[in-house]
Amino acid sequence: MGSSTAATTATAAARLTCLSVVAVLVTTACGDGGTAEGEGGRSSPEGYPITIDNCGHEVVFEAPPERVVLLESAPVTILDGIGVFERVQSRAGFFPLEYYDGELAQKVQGAEAFSEDMDASGHLMISQEEVVAQGPDLVLGLPDGVTRAGLEDAGSAVLTQELYCEGNGGEASFDDVHAEIDRYGEIFDRGQEAEGLSNELSDRVAAVEERTRDEDRTAAVLYPSAGGGPLYTYGTASMAHPQLDAAGFENVFADMDERVFEVQTEELIDRDPDVLVVLHQGGREEAQEALLQRSGIESVAAVSEGDIRYQLFNFTEPASPLVVDGLEHIAEHFSARG
Image (cartoon, rainbow, N blue to C red; front, side):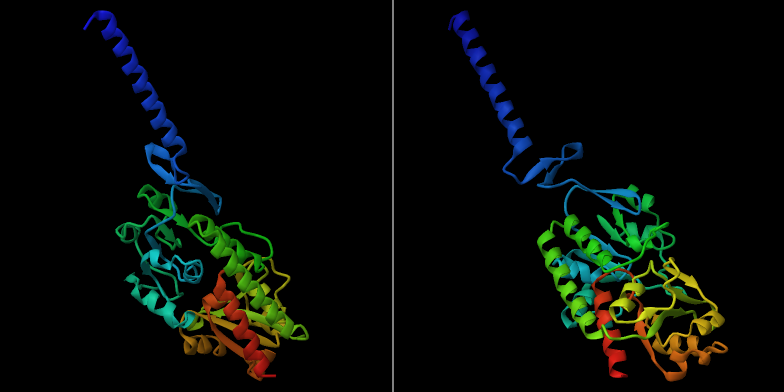
């Protein structure tokens, strides 16, 4: 073969190689609509990466999470409602089965419980190392002793309820429930399911409002600490406020723009709510004792008349589908009492 022929052949081969490289680059960049190039050359599904703002922090998701660890119980019904609860690998804390229907209760029980240590006020006691050891790509909840930065350094994204964010202000509403659902729908690429869940909840809230619109009594939501500890109540930044409003009650602490704060028995007596919703973390009898042992509490109209509903905490706080369940429970309870 002559030198000119060899040169021609080499030139053709070089052109073919270049075309092949271009084709590969185009395929990588555009693909078939299924992936896109992410950080470090990793492929991300279509629509990813996405960035979620959570309590002033930017949380980046390169793909829908596959290994979820729950450090609080409120997200359970959102995850189940959009069809991704099977991605929960493990959980820590208190998960009362009274929150869930039979099928979901079985799913919750099936998720490994790697810690159930709670302090006297119902807060999870856990170390960051215990959480990291689970190998999550998403952690829901941020209890004391666990930091966002520490989990992110270990490769875990973190989300917490916006209502719990430091400096969170403004009056809470059922829009906060829908916002949480929308956020999870975006993260897990389940937008249609999220919309369906929100629409169902909106219909249920409207149905309660229709039944209770002639109600004209006052109410307060309380959390009494055991052993003579502080008595807490909820202002307009809490889901307790829109919940009472939808149930037809006027919140006697509607002039307080805080989420939760300590209240003295004397002030509760002065405001004298007609009904009380008393929240607890799984111990109705303990909550009842913690409330009724307070000196002078019998002077409150709701206490003297026995117009009290004891309710598990997540049925009122924070923003999740459980709040709609709690609304229905409140409306039914006080309607039955006439």
